[in-house]
View 1 (cartoon, rainbow, N blue to C red):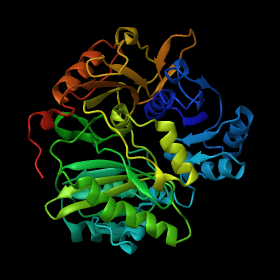
View 2 (view 1 turned 30 degrees about the vertical axis):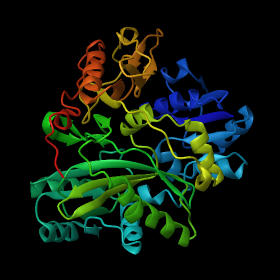
View 3 (view 1 turned 90 degrees about the vertical axis):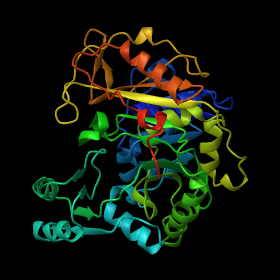
Length: 428
């Protein structure tokens, strides 16, 4: 098959890399892609949020499968346009993508499906926000109801900070969701679904705060690792049974079946697993480590989901190795990321990631070619450095060795990705 991946980030780079390794994939195209993706795929210029343009490109290149990476095109209905034009598509419809596009809608679906989640109030004015904050108490969890690229959530003990974030969301025209705080370690689980069947991938853990020891503001994610040796052995089965399958069934009953990736963000609380959030696509940076460990050909899995054939798909196969990714962020990220700075040293990170000990490799997130053709930063999260290892310690060591070879003026990264797991300091 010929595949077309829509998007520009490290998540899409990981997907392209996975598709290119599938023996049944004869060609991989990306739209619009990035300089790293361009090294292994044919990149075409397109507005990823323009459904008609993406559909026309899919027809023009003869794509057998279109994979839509980011949330914004999904919420905008790009998958609907591509399907309507006759191309097999991996990614939910606009109606189904409301599971990510509206947190209040997701809460409604979860409540109808009896999915365990945090208590929540949807607020449209500051008086309601203040009452909800007082009702739940600190720590306060304040979420922009709409899409915010992973940065619309504030978790704080300071009531004034919580109110300020809520006011900013309200002033921007969005409603606000106030939630009860969930204790316990967080887990990300991707579930591939065709609207009926659910096939879970391996869980991962990401790091949302910008600084070591979870200091500073939330980001789109500063790193991740997989597998989670500390997690209960039956966690994935329990989440499919109590969260993913009931949600997929509820969406089907509503006449808006969800087919694509249901990203389940969880907190393993003292009262059992509870859903923190749903996303309607692969998460970034967890995709980088989960797909690094997937042995099953990715293109064949995604095409089975697009065709409604997951019920008959063989059990997934996984590497035994651990995977770690570390995000290299630009100066000023997340508040005011600086762009246009030169990036060097990538040629020294020369691993292929084909096996444990095979060296780190780099996935591009926010990069572009400068006016003179050199590689420069173009976003807040610039690169993801990924490594496999025989165990978590080796994967961390190789990933961080790769990070140290990269030069981006003013850049920063967390130094503690997977460190607590390695030390056995995470308990459920």
